[in-house]
Image 1 (tube, rainbow, N blue to C red):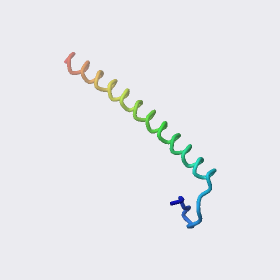
Image 2 (spheres, helix red, strand yellow; image 1 turned 180 degrees about the vertical axis):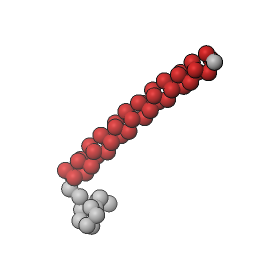
Image 3 (spheres, rainbow, N blue to C red; image 1 turned 90 degrees about the vertical axis):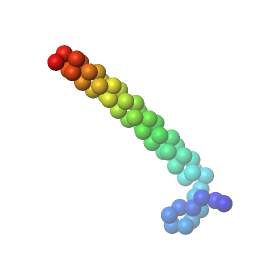
Image 4 (spheres, rainbow, N blue to C red; image 1 turned 45 degrees about the vertical axis):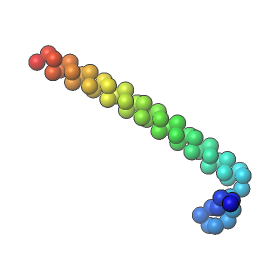
Length: 55
């Protein structure tokens, strides 16, 4: 079953490759964002632990 565009016409192989490439880019961006979030979360937890241990 060929993929179809929103207009109902079949997508060409170049379109599928473009979409596949973009999905890969978005997955990489999402992973980077997740990694940055995890790093920030660990830093905040370390600051909180330091603050609560010094009071």
